[in-house]
Length: 87
Image 1 (cartoon, rainbow, N blue to C red):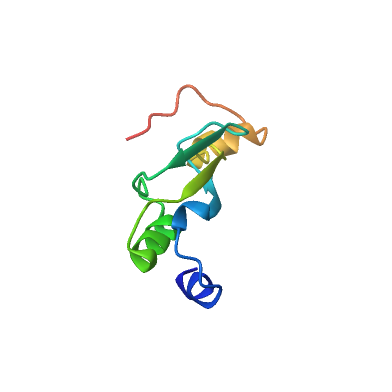
Image 2: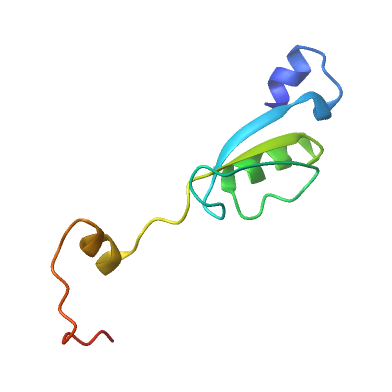
């Protein structure tokens, strides 16, 4: 991103729009932010590090948290045994 802006001689990173997935937002929710931290998103961290600033517009697209182990199995129609103890 930094190389592209340099090549195009663009000096205002506020003209940059970044669209990325966000596990912290529910599926389908969209949030627009500017000048904020990466909130742990490695791709956004990389852009901030390369540009030296977080002053750009981000479109956060909610994808929700993926299901874990037994939650995924049940969501796929697997049987539920309430007598099974989980440690």
